[in-house]
Length: 272
Image 1 (cartoon, one colour):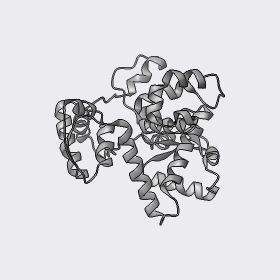
Image 2 (cartoon, rainbow, N blue to C red; image 1 turned 60 degrees about the vertical axis):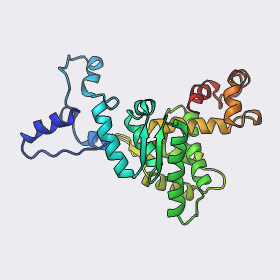
Image 3 (cartoon, helix red, strand yellow; image 1 turned 90 degrees about the vertical axis):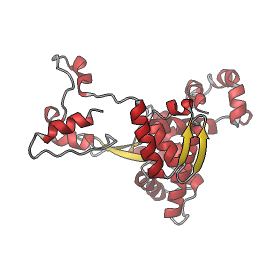
Image 4 (cartoon, rainbow, N blue to C red; image 1 turned 30 degrees about the horizontal axis):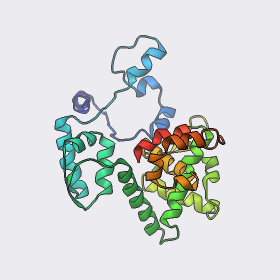
């Protein structure tokens, strides 16, 4: 929304280049070379208080407006060759730019017809299936989809166990590799995941250390749910039983080891 005004403003300047990106993964690299006052432009007057002014450099972009959604639907349908007509409920869900992108990418080259609602969990499952299948094909089936997905789930689980929220140090990635995957093979799979746009590395300032994170935070939560579900005992091995037994799960698992957080699992179950 602010892009048009920005371009008009910049058109009056000379020797001014603009790089547009949907992700902030390159900011740490740019920040390392440029002072903050040359890199960021405040969207409101500064007060001089660092705590108050930290939000002055942020422009929050929310859901699509009605007009933006119509434009986005037309463009995404064409780009991914997917045909569908969302109901009012589905349209409201697709106002979220990320969900629209993943839904269309996951259903590429399909005729879906009328869509009553967008299944969040199955959309992510389609997306993961597409990405892991692509890596399996590109590596001439040296790595199966199950091995790739298992490693990805382990990475997210390791992030959670280490208490680093949604990132993990490059040096600790080896802790996520399944026993059947060597260190070299694990690194190769991570490189393929990076090429497919599933994960991204962040360079740390003033240190050679790198951290890995998933590109989409919502996908991270979905994979964390899958990882935690995989740790459940047999009585809760499928979605239906889990939903029916939420109270029982909490009662049985909450007192157990710190490696399993029942609170985290229950907060994510709504994605099923």
